[in-house]
Length: 101
Image (cartoon, rainbow, N blue to C red; front, side, top):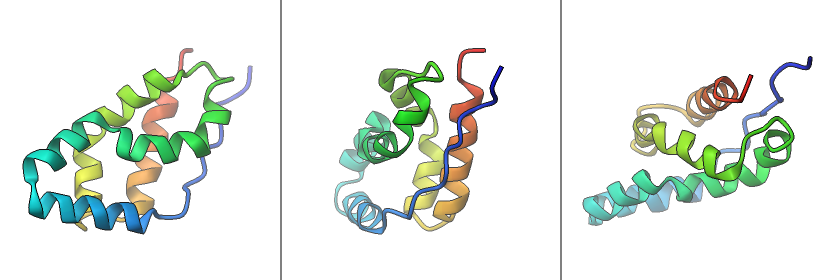
């Protein structure tokens, strides 16, 4: 049996963070809805991690659920309270723990 897939931390999406933070300042309710939906950050991460996750048994829909559940940490990254490395590594760990045994 092989271990969990390798999910390297991708380069920080600084423009995505900037746009999301600007939205949070201008329209907090829209930013909250965007964070809840998770697609804003799940799409670029799935492009990077999906090829390793699908063969390990995680669908894109399940990945989106896991990312949505990580909303608070993603918010802390957007607001500058967490580094991207902390946030992405934590999310990678959460994703791997939720793979089917």
